Length: 311
Image (cartoon, rainbow, N blue to C red; front, side, top):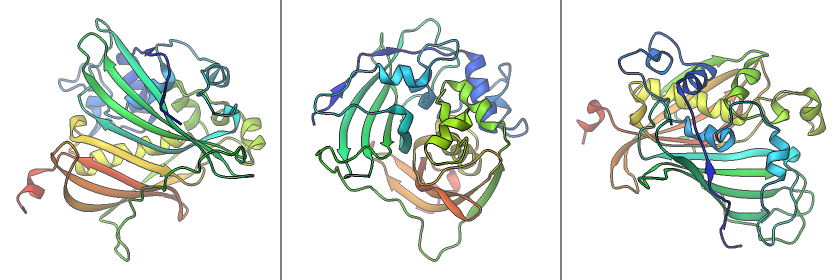
């Protein structure tokens, strides 16, 4: 299936939005106050914030998540897909420019397209891959590129292409992580995070989770994903947002409100990014009670001077 482009979507944000996001993913007032306090001399947007604009758009209130997705155009050759059966499969964001704290005064939009829709077979899922580009419409400057894989449970068997193999970023075999950080969630964590614009009922209503076999509410996959980004930026990026350049992971198991996340990190050394820059590669997994919930995690960061001195 050829790439299918959606109509461009206007997006907006303000300081309150970016502070809420930073708070919802666990930024602390000791090392990360500059993400939380608008009068801090180095106040900045946490770098992965653009990922939520694909949901938030320019809304100022809650929206009907399922109705909005159901109303989206359907790519030619794609079967009708029920978004109440959709879960995240994989997310990646590549950051090209630092986002200003407010969108006011400029024209911003997300340009999204479907890259492919894949049939994994009868009784198995359908996979949809999409790309989202955040752009300043006036200057044509791109600020971020994000990729998502949506998994529609139990909807396969319609005769489509099975799709490409998954790219893996496994941690080194038989090597202990270089760092481990734990993060505790609460029964209300998902209710706070959803205020960023991701209003899928799966993360708020027990009935939605029961219908999909999860037994109740589950956390947003992007919540755990963003927590991992925060932990890695703290450990390897000196808490400077512009140091995080590329970030991705695959969602492998649900997280329940109240679970404790354990982020395990391996420093892999320097690589040459497709932009030509030398970046520090960190691989990671996130576990809950020794069960992997995020796999194939990979972060690329501006290398600190102590790493570059080894070259």
